[in-house]
Image 1 (cartoon, one colour):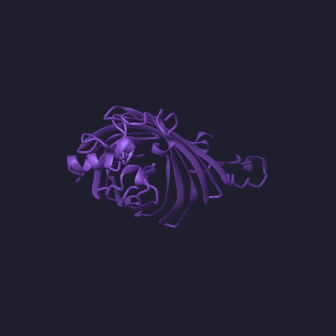
Image 2 (cartoon, rainbow, N blue to C red):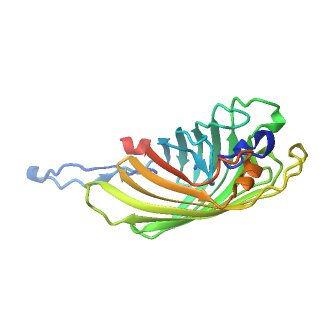
Image 3 (cartoon, rainbow, N blue to C red):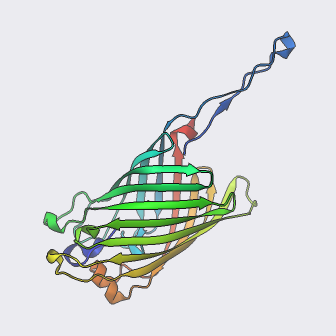
Length: 279
């Protein structure tokens, strides 16, 4: 999810288990005691997966698809309500190294205590099929922590902090901090359809690149997005706006192109489910 200064900077900034129940019919008419209702225990292992179609892939205020549509998908193994590991991928476009896709591998610990959830882990951004010398390729890693709190059916707030010592393989430190708020709208105009609004405000700090990129001081910036969506069963339709405070010149310093930043409008359709929900 990124873009880079110089040869490869086009990518510096360019991410549930269910419960089933069955009941035994009453045998009272036969003179036997009524059978107890038996609930099956939730499986300690589940796999969540989904696919998304979007008119633009924007990451931290920067397009990763050259403003073109992108298709994305993921699969995540979840175990014992604590451990998870997954893979996420997206089509990309406009990168100087011309990768075939972005593929993110991630794993961590995630658990919920009443309304509070804590998620900590790490991820590796991999760009298969890149052209050019390996030292200018874009693969890199981040670690993260994401606490969140749910206010019942009203909505939730989430904090995000990501850190790396080698942002987009430039040798620069990178820290991203953001807050996300989501509010569920009390609309019941269409049966089984729920509506929401959400927004994120974040800041990306980036240090100085290493020698291969000329020891350039990259530009820190603010980014924000807001959207409205509707969910019906496994499907979600969303409209979202994204922008940042990067000037065109600062955008070129960070990303190697002036046009990849600025205001963006996206429409997406996603489908998310899990094996436990298919039973």
